[in-house]
Length: 193
Image (cartoon, rainbow, N blue to C red):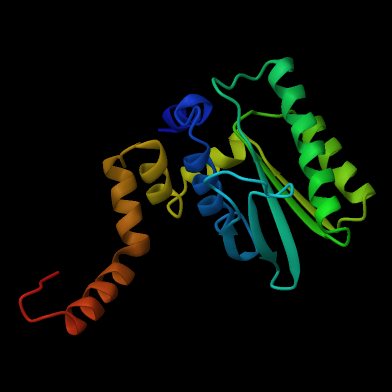
């Protein structure tokens, strides 16, 4: 499954910016101490350097940007394009809110450790207290985790293997059962779960 997820992240959502932003919005809620995660203008329009807004550790406003490329490769051309996009989105976000303290950037290009470090350092040099760069590998890890299986299926159409299904239902089965019971107790008598 790892290979399928990696391959799908490279090109499955080509030209579908809405789905890209929705995928990243879903994943950001799984990526760490982010809450109140919401899209800004997923259907297009000026977004002031941010595709996603959230709270980081419930106290700091966080802006997130999505930088996907069509037919993503790990060539210097795509990596450099994404680093430039990161810097541009960071500048736009800081123009929108000069006291911004947290910035997140998500991309389907696999960046080098040095490139990620350079991006984080550039953000901290501008006064941010935290910067996350989620490249393709970090997105893949989230999608291939039990918490990410549903998002992976929804946006990349990758079905769960038998072992992943077992893991998913071990993790979420009781909660799903409770939701079903709650729904059926509120639903009409002819509705069944």
